[in-house]
Structure formats: C-alpha cells, structure tokens
Image (cartoon, rainbow, N blue to C red; front, side, top):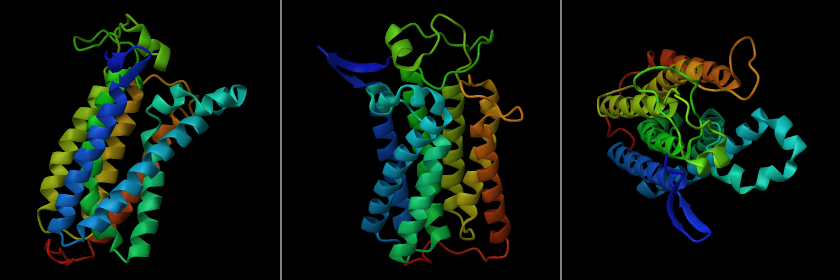
Length: 264
C-alpha cells in the first residue's frame, strides 16, 4: 500500500513506524487515563508503559528471529539489518516479554499486579489495532490468496522488497481483520473496566478473547515457518495465552468486585 509515508532523496519515513508510534501513544493515553481513574500514580504508570512498549518491540523481534532461525543462521547479518528493524515481528512474542517485564516492574514498585494489568489491557488492544494498520501499509503479515470481494492487492515493489508480500494477487486482508477485532475489543474492555470488576477480570478477558481471535485469523495468514501438528507457532502461543487468561478469570470469580477508587 504505502510503505513510505514521506520520502526525501534516500531518506524516507516508514508508514509502519509512524503508525506503531501512534499506536503506542494512543495506548499510553488510554492506560494513563484508566490508571488515574483507578487511583494509580500517573508517573509510575507512564514509566511502566514505556518499559512494556520497549520490551514488546524487543520480544516481537526475538520471536520473529526464532521462528525464522534457519534464515538468520544462514545470514547472521540480517539480524541487524534495516529489513529486520522495520519488520513487524511476532506480536505474541512481544506480548510475552512485555508481560514478564510488567510483572517484574509492578512487583518492584509494589503495585497490585492484576489490578494494574487491568488498566493496561484496553491500551494494549488499541495500540495493537493501530499497529496492524502499519502492517497493512508496509505489506507484512499478509494473508493467503482468496477470491472474496474484499480481497486486497499489493502493487508497490517497495513493499515486496521490504516484506516479500506477493504483488498483484488477491489476498485476505488479515492485517485489517486483526485491526478491526482489536478495535472492537478495546471498546469492550474499556467499557468493562469502567464497571465494577474483580482484579484481573479485564486482563483475563483480553488474553482469552485476543488469543482466540488471533488463533482463528492465523488460518488465513500466509506462513513461512513450518507448522507443528497443523498449527503455527503463533497459534500454539495463542493457546497458552488463552489458557493463562482463563485461569485468571477462574480465580477472579472468587474475588469481590472493587470500585475504581480502590487503589488510591
């Protein structure tokens, strides 16, 4: 579509990077607002969001390299290439490292883990939704061929050069599928957060719903890595995250709903 937002000589501003940055800012704004509403310190929440975002980007890249490790072993220099830097990475890999980083920081700061995670869940969803638009602009994370009326075609050779997306073929717009469902999930979680809920209920819902949706969308994605028992590695990660979310939800049933001012 439009992999280069602005181009001056050899310099260009990648559309993907701009939309990822906008996604982070939108997610940060939502998280700080909800965190403040729950009585958390805005500065602490902002710092946590920055650490989580950095960990997410790193984790996504690490997972991408691990999934395609044969290619990177053959060409180690690709790890530090512009191609790798601009690639979207694997979202679930980023989410896992982000969750681990968040857990460590929250424990260090004495924050209630589940209640704080609840404030972050809607922000992660809206950030993911906007970030996937960046994937669509760059051409990465494309779908398999289809003959549906809403199929999309990529034409820009720059997109092919950056991501390898096939040109002039009708493809499932999987990036838009995921962006759309994450936007709806954001609206649902944001509304759910603003109602009395047990600590962990919002993040539990996010993990279950987002993972199930990603699991299903993966069947329409083109996969370069090999499948295991008919499923991609991303789908296996989705299963693990969905189970983790289900465990959290099961535990929240034993907790009483808390008002949003409970964490002053």
